Every structure is written in structure tokens, then in C-alpha cells.
Image (tube, rainbow, N blue to C red; front, side):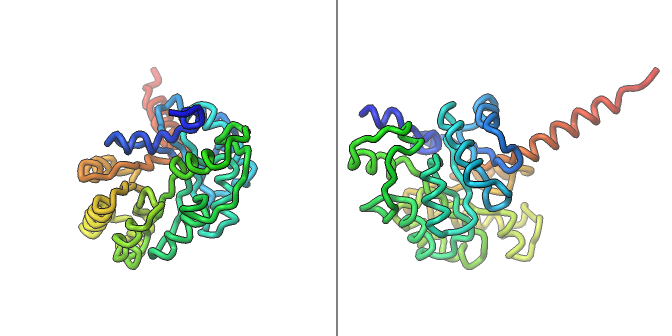
Length: 267
């Protein structure tokens, strides 16, 4: 392994390659870099800054990604759209992967790969001295090769039409993980909030099968409140789990502690 390969490590990729589960948390509330060390202390492999559902700036996103790189937590970013000005800029800012919502077809997935990967896999413009490279200028061919391999593309399936095209989406070269956005898929299927519905189980079975056929990983999104279902889908073959957001962690732990203290009987 070269010096650059040792430097650029993608924990999610390593976990999945080893047949293990990669566990991630969403950053949607905490704007300061401490969240990266908190994620490390909690034992997460990865975090992803949620630009789709937050008011975070690219500057804040980059700072969190850089902090995550420093402590050994793999930073991803969920971008709000497929456009290159989102995909390539968050990668230039330090992200090791992009989670892209509303991927509805192979053409959508191909566009994302084109924006996320350097030639020959894609058309991403070369930016030297990025945070992932510790701001050093490595030989260009080596840097592009390593970054193409280590940069993760996660395509989110969130509609029935996208689900019907799961096989073609999973078959796109450069897509690494196909993740179901369970909340949005429930809503689109007319079963809002019914995570245990057979349609959802069928959806996961379909995506897991498609990913297995193409050597890709299946991701679980939106099921943080349903650990039994997460276990069921992991046992079925899913390998990337979005396990909840910073806000939900604070709320659940805070509510539990308040309830515990409130239950103390006053003599």
C-alpha cells in the first residue's frame, strides 16, 4: 500500500468490503466541529452532513468534514440535488462521499457519478491539495486513482418509479451504495409512517437483490426508530445503516433523563 493509500481511508468502504455493517449518523443540528469527535467517541464509522434538510453552509459542511477526516470518521454529505455545483464542491471541501436523493433512473445515477468521479470514470474537474489529501499535491494520476476508488457514491431510491428501476440504478458503474429513503418511499406509496408494511419489506428485498447482482451495497435510511427492522434488513443483506440524527439523539436521551428525574418521589 502506497503512502497516499494509507493516508486516504474510507471506513465505510472498508467495513462493507469486509462483509461488516457500516454505521453512520446524520448531522443536521450541530454546526461546530466537535460533532466529529463525538461521532468517533460514540463508535460511528461515518457521519453525513445533511444539506438536503438543513440550513448548513458549504463552509460549515467543509469544516465538519475536515474535522471528521482528522479523527478517523469518514465524512459524507447528503446534497440537495444532482447538480455538479453541489456534488463536486462538497467533495472538494473534504467529503469522502455523496448521498444523492431522488435518484430515479440509471441516467440520474450516471450524472451523479460523472460529477463525483475523476476521468476516466467521470468528468469531475481536478482540484489539487484537497483536505482528503491533507492539502498536499500528490502525483495527479495516483491522486485521481485513489480518490476515485475511495470516494463513495450513494444513490437514494425514494419513489415507486425509482424502485422499479433499482436494478438499472445498481448496475451503473461508479455507484457504490443504493440506499432506500424509507420515509419518502412510504409517503410515495401511500403508506406514510407504516414502516412495517409488506410493501417496504418487498422494497428492501428488491433493492438487496439488485445490489447483490451487481456487487453493490444496500443502505438503510429513515428507520432509526425501528431497530428490529434494521436488524431484519441487515440480516437480509443490507450493509450501510443511517442510524439517526444528532437532533434525535439529543431529544431521546434528554427526554429519558428528564423522565427519570421527574419520577423521583419527593419525600
